[in-house]
Figure: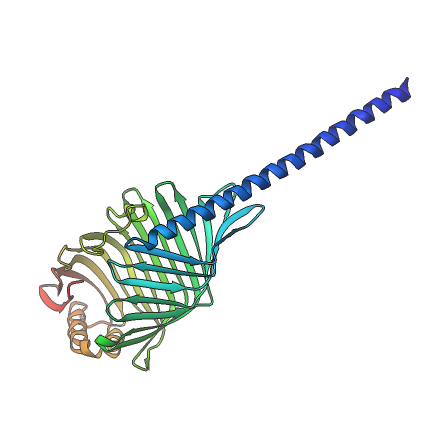
Length: 336
């Protein structure tokens, strides 16, 4: 009796293992079928969207499109990427694009984008760039992006605009940009580490740049509606900080509300904190020789307000493009 009971128990365990194995095989087969069906659907959908965009005013292209990542990820891959925004006269080309999202969290994707890149804006502005590594992440819902972040290392580029006699080399050791919806507003933060500029063969020492601001009523820019065609006209922002650091304690920071009117004129009430007034005067004069007189005039006015010290905290008012220190106009900002 004991022997037959043990045999029955063993037979029951065997049947359960067989059933479990069959269930696992069926699940894997079903999951595989669903994954490849989803990949095919995504590929077809992207191809249709790209084909439709080619007939519109805002087009995008992805060469050798494929969908990869089985078994646990899914993402779009392109050998090269191109965009063309006809109303603004902007077009751009990039290297290979790789993307991936976890199958259980398809709304959160990560990307890598290779250089080189070229951005062109009519009539003759061209920006050529390359980088060591660029990666990004995005969280999206059915109505568009919720937030987006990008970071890159080893950026090198050159900006040319022959009609203005402009040629600027740009390099940065590291850069980041973060954008997210905040109610109806849009939070934006960006930074550039060791930013170096080369203007007409004149190389300037590197500096660190950072910006943090909130743009009012701009959350919709990340939805299907997109940003307005006349950007940045009619925008209003709260500048938490815009800082420049030359090193050796030479810093400049601005904060406060800023608006751009429908006519492109800038207005605002900013707090300016500056360390090393003379060094900043010399840097601006070196960077923009045509603005040397303005830089000298502003530096003298700031020094007067600071009691002759190299550090100052002053109020900068901008009214319809005219910059005031105290009661005195010191510079003009042309319409954007």
